Image (cartoon, rainbow, N blue to C red; front, side, top):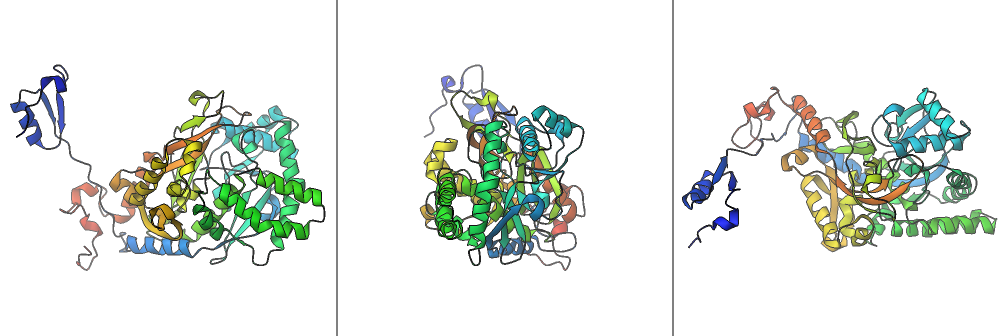
Length: 494
């Protein structure tokens, strides 16, 4: 027996809006409830299965995943950006996220550019640096255009030391700077004497010591193995890197002791890394970049190989369209703030560190890192729910990176633009928060979702490659499959 609806429950003046089955509206109306019936149906999103030329998209994505899984990122050495990154020159400054010019750069990215120009000796002070950038004396380019990644503002300037990570399976190389730590650091847009002193110590002491040690290790350091172990020790290798940093220090310390004759210098290097839980972040990012790049250029593949932000824009690139950016405004982070700061101080989402989620860890592996909740907010249950939800938009599961709390199930791998559009689920990310003004630095950390617009635009580009008609909804069969995507021989793949 169904209890009669009580007017008090619905409110005498508000009534009820019914979306969906008309029978619900009729039932409520019969009980004297004011009902507004809305004729709405879920939007029809075609299941893109074949390109116009007949290529099987699932097969292309399977190949992309296979290449990512075969990747073996090995830390082989170090060098300066000018010496190590192909195509680099003295006036080139790399930045995080999709392409952007000085006029549109956010505060922290401008602050990092200004600080880097002073650090390089190209400008006497920050004001002169800003004038140089505004006059166009510096060439800007995304780190991703040069096989590199940069956290937060992501600035890589010519003299900065970079890690050299080689994918043993495919031979491609990726680059990333050394991690400065948290707080008032260049990558968060801070500048000033304390920032420059730290950067110069990293260039003159940390870099040569680490370089000699790393290059003495036969075969290099297996970063995928370190990431795998770190996930089992409570990291997700994006905003929690305590285990990863400890594992790296464990790997490199014997080599430091063998190659550095200055005991005090060796001790300083050890103390700096040991006191910076985020040191491994830059290495995990370079590892992700090295593993993802071989998947680029596979015709028909709809998986992401790049997901990055510059504090103004959020951009993605797909394996099948590796040279095309799909861009939307950067989102607002829901965060926890350091004392004295609030959401009014926060810059929108920024950094290349979402390469970790793109490669199958980071925020997608939050189930491995329940303690991350203390840094970015939420609860251990939220961390588990995030990972479970991300399986819905990924093409596969990782075979080398696993989650103990889920019975060692592989992490979600291969963000599929088609699945994002079909489910309406957007990638969930965790991130640091920079102050919106240049020169200040870190103010907190938090979580957010990627913006829908860039995925919608990417999906439209896919439809153009797949469909004979510009309007897929006009040619859907009863199963939601575009007839134009079926094989030309008339067979039904379903």
